[in-house]
Length: 400
Image (cartoon, rainbow, N blue to C red; front, side, top):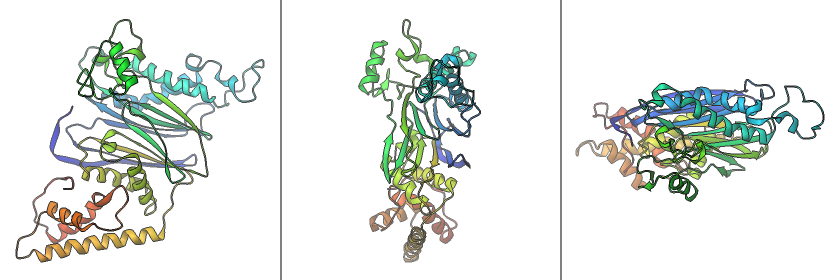
C-alpha cells in the first residue's frame, strides 16, 4: 500500500516532442511516495515497416517497486510491434488489407498492418512481455515482487488504439467533450471478480486477496501461479483491453494518459476541462502538464503522478481573451493575498493554509474549470513568500 515521506518531492521530469502531425508533453513527480515507481514511453514514428507514420505513448504505474514499470517502458512497444508484424501474433496481416486479394502474393513490407492484426498484436505483445519478464531471476525468485499497470495509445494516420491493463486511464477529448475513456480494472468489477474467484482467490477490502488494488497488471507473479489456469485466467491477468476508434481529424482535440495519482483527485471531465483551459493560455505542453501535476498535488494526491498529453491537429489554440482573463485572475489573487497580509500586521502573519482557506471562502470567480483554487496555489504561494520571506516551510498541504 506504500509508505509516505514527511514532505513531498516536487521535482519533475519533463519532456516534449512534435512530429507526425502530433505534439506531446509529459510530466511526472514522485510526490509523497518514498519511491518513484512510474514510467512512461513516448515515440513519434515507429521503427517498423509500414508504421513510420504511427506513434505510441504510454504510462506505467508501478507498485511494490519500479522494476517492471521501467522494463516495460523500454521494451513493451518492441513486443507489440513484433507481434503485430510477425507471424506469431498476426499471421497474414499484410494480406488482410482492404481491397487485397488473398490469392495473390503478399504485398511489399511497407504495407501498414490491418486493424484486427494490430489489436491481436497488442494483446499478444502484453502476454509475451509478461512471460518474458517471468524468467528474470529476481522476479522469478521473489526477490522483486513488483508489478505495473499500463495504459497507452497507438496512433495510426487513420485510427486510435487505446490500450489498458490496470487502473491507469486514457481519455479522448473530441468535439469539446470527453468522448471516450478506458475502463479501470478493479477487483470489484463483476467480470474481474469472477475470474479471481475462479482462480481460487477472493476480493476483500476491494483488493485481490485483500492486498492488490488492481485486477490486471504486468508482473505481480505472486498472483499468477495457479496450476491449471492460463495466463489470462490467473488472479491477476496481464491481458489488456484494446479499443479501436476511427480518427475524426476535424473533431479530435487531445488525448490524456495518466496514472491513478491523477485520477484519484480529478474526474475525466475535470481533467479535460482543465487541460482545455490551460491550452487556451499556453501552447507549452510541458507547462500544461506541470500545472496538472501541481494541481493534483495541491488537491491532495498522495501517490506518484504522471501525465502525458497528446495534442492532435484540432487541439485548442491560445486565445488572447483567455490569456487576459488568466492574467487578471492572477492579479486579483495577488492583491487579495497582499490585502490579507497587510491587515494582519498587528495580529501576526497568517500561515499559508489560513490564506488559502480565506480565499476559498471568497468564492473567487473565473478559476480554471476542474482545477479551481488548487491550480493557482503557486501564484498565491509566490506572493505570500515575497511578502513573508522568513516563514517556515509547510510542505505542500492540500486545500482545506
